[in-house]
Image (cartoon, rainbow, N blue to C red; front, side):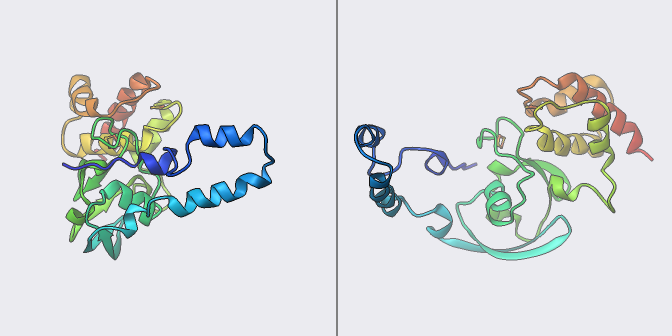
Length: 209
Ligand code: FES
Ligand code: FES
């Protein structure tokens, strides 16, 4: 499955102005004289991907709401959610299907949204972390993560919770080993795995009722 590198949009070298050029100029000039350099850099910057390639028209449900829009045919579901629909609860970690931070539900099953093309969700149902709570009440899995201190920085947590819900609903939360196996695609750099296992075990019970 395709993935897209967006390093230019996240701090890569600005076209036409090298770091050395700016530092050399900055040694003997005022901040005001750097303004034209900055404007020149903006003019030379590549156009955003969203405005470039061919588009696909899609109609799908996200968190219970019907959405219809044109999307860049090369866009991932992750970028569609974060950059077009402002659903930034879904996180971008590796953007290569290796960390689980971008996990959402597609027709009720956990998928890596960075590896899912936006055009593929036409006619389907997407649920993100923003759509998990219901009627002002946290989902039992969200509550279990709080109860068990299953996070530290929290960056991996939305993806962990989406995978954890699927772990239970898809019948894999039968014992600690099965939970670990199902959740192994979700990396936590803070190492909150003990709490995560406890949270999934707790929610597996509460979700029965
Ligand atoms: Fe999708 Fe890492 S951002 S798996
Ligand atoms: Fe920090 Fe998991 S809580 S990466």
